[in-house]
Image 1 (cartoon, rainbow, N blue to C red):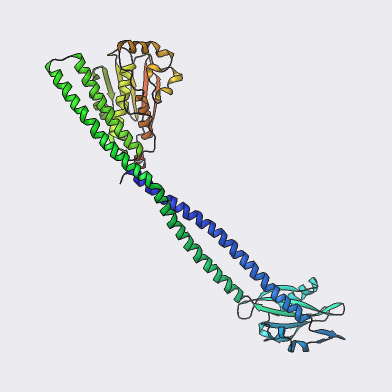
Image 2: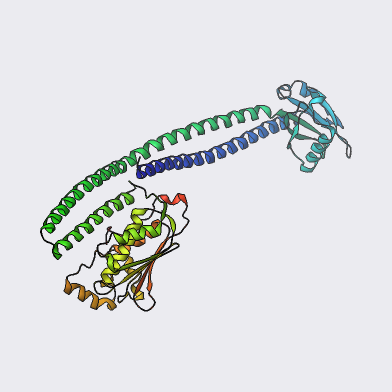
Length: 447
């Protein structure tokens, strides 16, 4: 599986997770609102029921010359259907006594709570509703309605009902909501997974087509280049000529360009991952310089350095730096010094340099040293008159891309005594997690 396909599949899983999470969050909010509304509605309905029963029964009893008549409670349907019923009676300033308890005195709360209910009735001068624990450990909802004896409250009808039934119904609703939300989240995850898969099919087809194109391009481009090199070598064997040598040099350069282009395209498309491995940077630089056709004017000073990097990409960056110095660092054959130090590769030339204002611009696509700034006008004219190749303007752009891929930097500076100093800085300890590239490259591979 290519890295790009793996990345798309991770994206699909992430989209499914986000879709399911968003659905779950919305359902949780709705479920919480529904649970609170149901709880409040049930509590309100229960309070209304028990309060209405208490008020109705309080109107069925009365005082006559200070005597409380409870006979109607024996025949009242509200009294017979009440779960718990009692009448509290008290003289002014005394604790209430309990009368006409249904079903038994043990069903009532303790005397302290009864005193509290009585005080609440006296303070409110009306019906009060409170919750208290029952004798069996449950909870009762009580309503106490006053019975007036003249201009004072002489008694209160106390009606209680169990909260357990309402709470059981509420718990059933909560369980059904939990099951329903879980099922909906699972359905949303399945639907999101299917939709994200359908959305990514064109991208997967595009990746497959691009991979096929790159493979075919690699074959179709390398084969004629190899044939062309054989033809040039055969022609040059009959008689050495400067044009044959130049043709061989250009063929080799074009071959490197094609190889780098294909590798670059595979990296940027995600079809291939840059593999960073421990390597000797000094040996890589020396080998790269030796493979250059005009390496006689290049001197390398190095010390052993180990970095974590991609050998092909680093070699391409070093080659671009050296060829850039050879091309723009003065007349043909001008010396170029390459130095390798821990985490640093420097390439110095003895040309006119690059104005400070243009040193960042030359790292862009399609910008060459010969075309950057007024300070290089004479160099541009010389290159044009002699017919020298001015390059594609991608060499330094590739160097910066490779540096970023390795978590490093690339910059230009003035060399001591004149000329330009190009620096490629690489960390000597790169984390293993950095082996996958997330940097976009700036243009076509090549010098």
